[in-house]
Length: 139
Image (cartoon, rainbow, N blue to C red; front, top):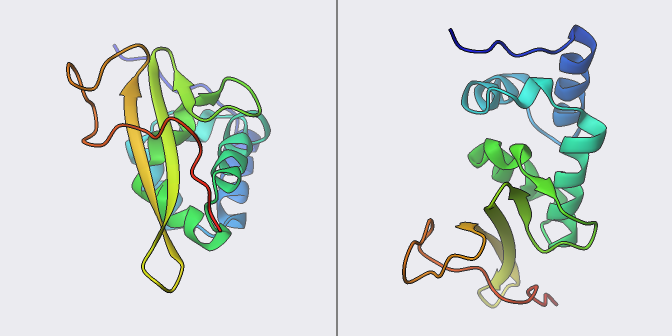
């Protein structure tokens, strides 16, 4: 028998409230929860908000954050190792988000890279592009 998600109605409501406050609709939160089954059991203050703040520090525009987390709902399963970390971690698995300018109009695109700690990209890539060694400088 599989484990059941243990959470409270208050925590679930707090997660939904926080995610809708950043621009997601309730049906989108429902879709995210079907992919990341632990999502509704996470503490929004210690697990969800730090990930959103990480995305903002990496240069992600606030209006683009809902689209990114909708496409990558498991990003909330990862944690920050420290407040100035360049990647999120879950065991040896890592996610690094790089926000890069494209085109002459200054629009930005986010690259979400999944990789394993201490793995070389020629041996075992998880995503096609390795993360940048330093945070991208955006102007």
